[in-house]
Structure formats: C-alpha cells, structure tokens
Image (cartoon, rainbow, N blue to C red; front, side):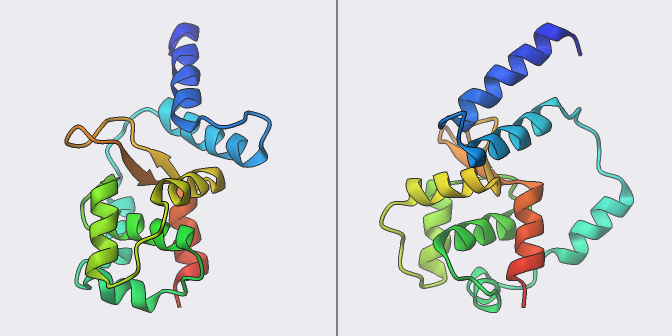
Length: 155
C-alpha cells in the first residue's frame, strides 16, 4: 500500500468517525476504524471460524439472548444486538434492524438511537459500516466491542 492509499484511508476513517479529534474516545474509535481500513481482507482461518461459531448464539432468539446478558446501559444493549447480528450472519445492521431487535425483544426503544450509536462509536465498540446496506447507513461491531460483550456482558 503506497502513501496515497494510506492518506485516503486516513481521510475515510476521519469521515466515518467524525467527532472532536481531541476527544480521547474519538481517538480510540478513529484508531480502530483506521486499523480495520488498513487491514487487508483475508479469508478467516479455520480456527477463527471455529471460534466465531463456538460463540455464535444461532440457536437462541434475540429476546432470549438479550435476556441472558448483563446489560446495564443502552450502549451495551446496542453493542449486544450488533454482536448477535454478526454471529448470525449479518456483518452490519441498519437503524431499522436495530429497532426491530428492540421490538422483537420487547425492550423500550431508545429515545435517540443516533445518540446511543454515537456513544458506542466513541467507546470504540461500534463503527459505521464502510458500505451502505440497502441504501441506508449501517453499523458493525468492532473487535473491541465483541470482546466487551464476551468479557463484560455474558453471565
């Protein structure tokens, strides 16, 4: 990758993250987004696929999965929903899909989902997906977000 490609990825990461560049949480999110953009796409190894499959809540409905977790905040709930979607074959989720998960699980919808997602981004748990999904903005959980769900929210 040459310098121009790296500069382009840096600008793309800035645009995806937004926020105040002096904010420590914005810096964390920027570093995570840039790392993902610079990382060359490779097929997952069999051990990575096995690990992801072992954690996958595929046999559990979203309501049951959320009920099993130790969720204290809306940011934790959104990260957990994105985690569930990822492990059920959906790399990114739109606003409608997140709200559908809330409705299916019978949770009260957050007053301002955009604010909740922005807080997830500042924590480094979520990033905006590089490509739109069905013409809509979408988000995906980061590796940091996956670790947070697995280490802090699972019972």
